[in-house]
Image (cartoon, rainbow, N blue to C red; front, top):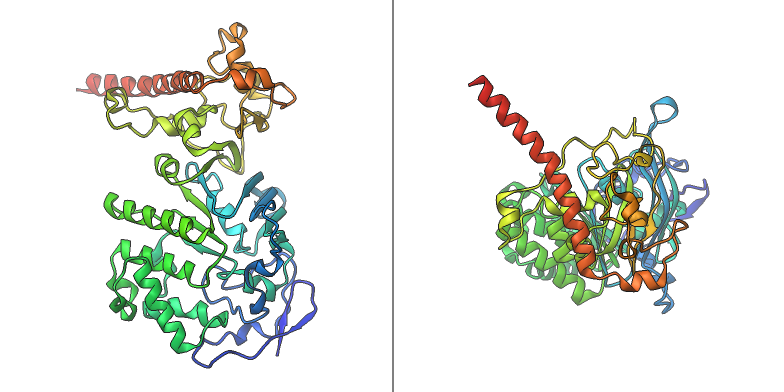
Length: 454
């Protein structure tokens, strides 16, 4: 039996570890898969990872080089469709993640977060075009042969899909679904694998008896725990969690987040966590990247970005969550008017300028690249240069505290060191106030209209 590869060559496939190991995958044995295509069952756990399973997850490439990132994404571009109907979903994303580090990715629906997550393991639909590099432990996922890719999935990097009920197989028991990747990757026999399943269930806080249950017999929080157990089944180096706490109540959400944090600290794995909730990411992750219209518009230490966002979009996302003990945010919640742009028809210049409460005239015509904005921080905003406290009316009254970077993107040492958290906080508050002002104007207009009708 041979296994198809992206290069058209044939790679011998070892015999199955056991007849009970997994359900049949012979439908993938004889077809030659072209470059750039994805597996028909790419988004499920049934990936047939027998081929090259001994070199799982790129761990054989690790030679004690701690300086190399676990995940290195370089100029990633993803387009759905082609020609006049091409839709750019991700536009030049650069991200790095080291072992034991937690990276959060935030943004509104439609900004490209889930597309980015799927691309990391080549789970995109066949019509998607992917450009750039996705280096997992130094090995490019884009150019991996299919046998190698199936060996990497679950064992080198695993994913917790958004919506556990839709990701689990409704007609198979929970224990069998967790056991499947263990047997497919030949990490254990049936008996030892079942013991491993029990350990995983206990590890995520579920009773062992739930192994015989079907997905519909579990609560939302329990199903999410099952997905986490499945993601940990093969001891991966990287876990990608796409909205792992969506639709969960706050108590279960807190338990899931503490569980994820504990697993990352205990096993030293890398975590990419995607969420709409900036507050959750700031509390859970080490670093935070904010995406808008397919691009990263701000990146930096999670707490600094949350408390003192330099990009107006990041400030608006942060201001949308009330602070406990802060009467101003409680009684005057801030919002962001408008909707994210259609990826098929993006605005010119800075794509955020139609919604930006502090936009300059140049923002409508000049695209804004990511600029160095202090130690470990980047932001794609012209106000990183002109001083974030300035407005379109007083841009000329900039001072040194706001001028952290030069026009060429090089950090000015004396200015960067003089910037303090108080400066960043004051600039953020002003941006949030501007955003709230536009939102308040909309609310006032709606109230006036209602009173007129009455």
